Structures are given as C-alpha cells and as structure tokens.
Amino acid sequence: MAERTLRGARLGGQSFEDERGIEFAARQQVGYKCPQGHEFEITMSVEAEIPAIWECPRCGVEALSTSGIEPEQKVEKPARTHWDMLLERRSEKELEDILKERLELLRGGEIGPAHLHRANAKKRVAG
Ligand SMILES: [Zn+2]
Image (cartoon, rainbow, N blue to C red; front, side, top):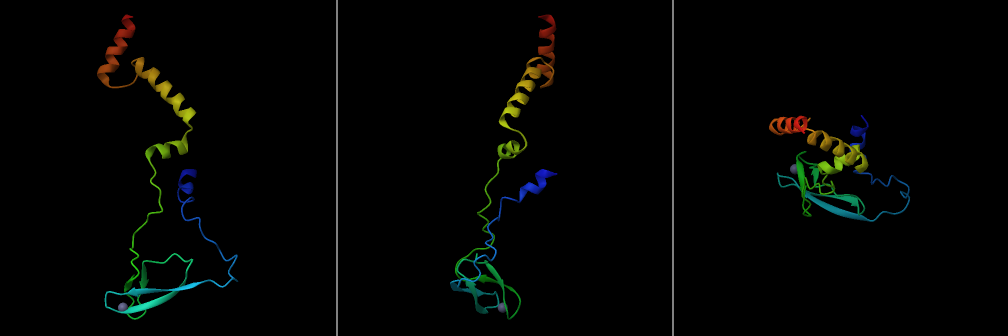
C-alpha cells in the first residue's frame, strides 16, 4: 500500500504557494493560436510554467502556444529502472542475502531449469 502512495510524491513538489505573493511579480505575454486562426495573448507571471495549450476565448478549442512550447514534453520524469524499483523495496544487503539463499538452492539442485535440477540432485545423492 505504501508503495503506491509514494509513487507520485517526488514529482511536482515545486509549488511556491503564495509566501511572496505580495511582491510584484514580473509579467510576460504568452501568445496562442487556435486551429481556427484566432490569436490571443495571456498575461502570466514570468515564474509561471507556461502551458503549451490554452483554451481559445473565442471558439473554445485548444490553442497552441506560439512561443514554441510543445505539448506533451514531460521531460521532468526521471527514468526509473527495475533496479531502482527493487531498491525501494529491499536494501542491497537484503538482496545479497536473498541471492545467496537462492544460489545455494540452485547449486543444491532444488531450484532452476528442470534438466539442471535433476542432474545436480543425482550428483548430490551420488556424491
Ligand atoms: Zn479559436
């Protein structure tokens, strides 16, 4: 259960709330153009993350930013490997212990591919 709640916690933790909302925030005009050809500008704080898409005030269709911001550019997400996910559940020490345990079973012919399994088991009995 904990694994699921942890998942999104690291991303997007960058809201500055309004602790310095009293200060004058620098503004910028961000241009958009909808597929119908309506062009408009939205005033935003320079600190704001500029959305790639804004709803056209005239026809309600999604308009694309004219300042070259591409939608679906989610670069922030760090790639998580299987190893990373594994380390979230087990420490390296634990993993080493598990590996050791499994290797012992494998060498003892108790686990592993069937052909190895039997051959090793027989050898063991014989030896
Ligand atoms: Zn429009």
